[in-house]
Length: 475
Image (cartoon, rainbow, N blue to C red; front, side, top):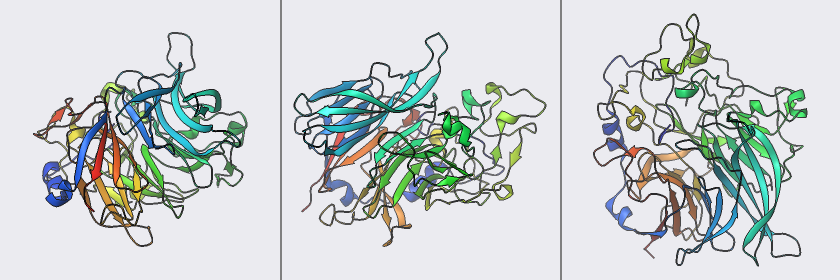
């Protein structure tokens, strides 16, 4: 898991490739003037793994605390915190990716009151015995502005798949007043979950939807009505209309809408090819048959869960060598219906690339040519930070920095190289912005692996469990 949260199924490198450190050094384009244009400080400390941070309509920061199962309001002026609600059955296990994750704060007040709705996603255990059976739920609360508390929980959808790995969990309220939600592939076919099949390409039957059986929702982006039902205009995929909006995802932890309604997502790759995608209804984003573009570059689908002649064991999984008893399939040999390639990757490398970096002999993923994209935001203000209009902002878990990508005029692709800024030694989890887009807030993980100043893996970060503020100092 760690910062990139999983590596899987790569072809063995046969020749020495460009080192990951050199590759990232070539892509480092942040100018000194750009770094100095921002001041930074810590707004709030002592948060229990702040996962989602939203600049609310009340000008407070709304934060989900993954480990504690709390929604907390933070006053930006002094960092004071107040608990909005605590979820008693929130399940957050150590070193796992379960817990209280995404949140959407409805900007509208409920008719005739000062109340508004908030929507959250969290993990829970459906089994009261000693056996742990994780599931994920989306719940709505009613926030009372007078008491500054949320109550009246309504479960919109329960029983969705959950795991110790790759839950994704980002939740947004779209301009169409529908909820959009990302579910990862659960970390299947790797590490402790090696013998569990990836189901990102699986689609539900009409009978499963009727029975509210959501097991095939792994590796999908969902679209729901605000009461949890299936929208009548959701795409029909495989002959069935369900909550599924798109499929073929690995671990999409970021989704954001542009003003014109374009939906962008950021997604973790295994050893290379973190993806930036435009999400279009009914499309297939390829995983695990295709990673990044369909180019057979440094990737082959190795299905460890379908081992032939040798019993599948989690301990047999190897990041670098695929044994003969594990079925393999090239991207070019796969049938991927309605495939949508990414508009940008972090980073595509040749098949000769050497993923065995001596700086990372054990936690190899820290040295892979990936950034660990944890979220995504868009900037569109005319009077925001100069040069930042129509850009996508992607925080990195591995490197404690922000990657800014300039969008083309029509928003269909990006132009130029990614620009790095706000460099620190933290795990950046989420980003929020003020309406004028001149102040930004970033949440940081309480712990986990990142890359140290020497380039080696480390559990030591500068600012664990805080909200950082970056303010543009120019005119």
